[in-house]
Image (cartoon, rainbow, N blue to C red; front, side, top):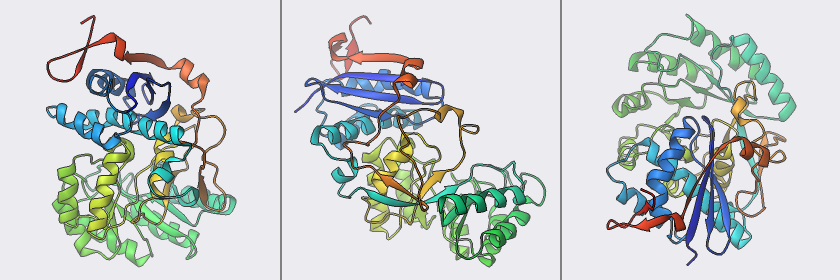
Amino acid sequence: MSRIVRLETFATEFLAFVRVTCEDGAFGWGQTSPYNADITAQVFHRQIAPWALGADSTDIAGLVARIERREHKYPGTYRCRALAGLDTALWDLAGRRQGKPVVALLGGAPGRLRAYASSMKRDITPEAEAERMVRLVGEQGFDAVKFRIGAECGEDVDEWPGRTEAIIPHMARALGDGVEKLVDANSAFSVPRAIAVGRMLEDHGIAHYEEPVPYWDLEQTAEVAAALDVPVTGGEQDWDMATWARMIALRAVDVVQPDVMYMGGIARTLRVAEMAAAAGLPCTPHAANLSLVTMCTMHLLKALPNAGKYLEFAIEGDDYYPWQRDLFLGDPFRVEGGAVSVPDAPGWGVEINPRWLEQAAHAVSSLEDFRPSAYGALYHKRA
């Protein structure tokens, strides 16, 4: 047993890294879910750290489950966002301690992984979107791309009138048959409109229809999936295991898309992937930015027996995601021939940029600063 004795967060509004240190000096780096990460860091120190300090660092799934039970009155997304920081740091720690990449701990092997170029833009004309996607296919070798249709949670109101009907055939013509095409509607449509758009997607050879209707309405999603041949996908926002079980039982989606950070880390994401595998469904996790979420997903995909066909790879640069600038040393997300490489170095195989850490808000919870409580958690001695 190697006890956790120190938990640190380095947070900005958009991102928080977590460092876990054990009594023998072993450490690992993880990350909470992006966005409102400064709030998530507070949740981490208030509701995660008191249960994790003093615990065995080697039983990751057991510790995550224990915190879920102990914090059962707070089952919401912030608990999972904070849990992700602990879970992913513990996987990195385990890999560093054993001298193995996380993918090997999960039963896979490092190596190349096919990626699809994922566009986040809606405020772009079909012509401009097609031009940049064709350029990326030529420059970086992508053989699959995803573009946006509808308006985010748009209630059948498009980003501008006629954009969806214009961009689908335009992208299909511009990219041709040699490139797999995916779309994301981000909960844009009603059921009738979603089915009508889905027919258009089928006519133009689109292979992936993401969140066609409000994602929280599983019955509506199932109705759309049953009506169409194009695979309907979803799940990126979902974290609750009961919701996942119902989604899979309803066959609401043809491909599950859990997000490692929204889910609460690798251990809980594996549970979703296993449920999907038992139902014969593939798992293509959501990874919409180039923070640690994409690297964690890379390791995971190379180990899942029901892994989907490709990794989501955000093509938007620092102008769209200024907060992802200079997070890591080197270039861990280099694309060659439409593929990325899962590192063979220990842990996640990346190193956090010290200069980024210096500019973040630093907070510490350490075992020596806490005292036991009657409930099994620890409470700050100064409280």
